[in-house]
Amino acid sequence: MLKFAIPAVAALGLVAFAAQSQATNADVQPGAAPMGWHLSREGVMAKLAYGVENSDQLALMITCEPGQAQAVVYGDVKPVGMVLQKASITSAAIDPLSGGLEDEVRLSVSDPSLKQLAQGGKMVVEGETGEFELTATLEERKLIGDFFAYCGTRPA
Image 1 (cartoon, one colour):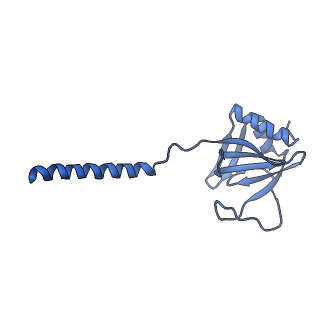
Image 2: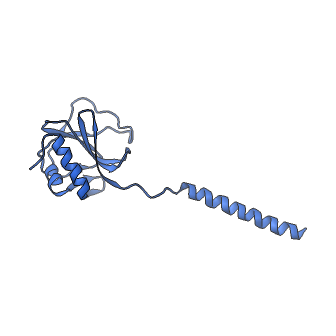
Image 3: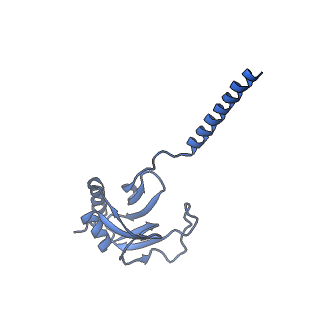
């Protein structure tokens, strides 16, 4: 009986260990997708966003339409030093991700924070954790240039 019980208990222990290891591995997410600058268009509106591509994980989004002198800024972070104006005096929409009010503000496309982004590929922003810098790769800088060119307001 002992000859049968020891291997059976050992086999059950291995099965339990393997099941526990597999369950733990299922909770581990593969490497997080990188954040970066992305350009898209929706109708006539251009959208320049810093976040995870093809997702709702955005830190900042700037939208504009061709020939407009203002851009609309959304997101959890805001460019430091920009002169903000509320986009609307009506009540803001509920943000489906956070459940709070969607923060939408307008700024001039000639705002120094946008010029710094267009010319140097850097933007200092402020969020809940303080100030930090969003940078753009050479490839992303081309997208940023395309954004301002599309809006008809490429900063000098």
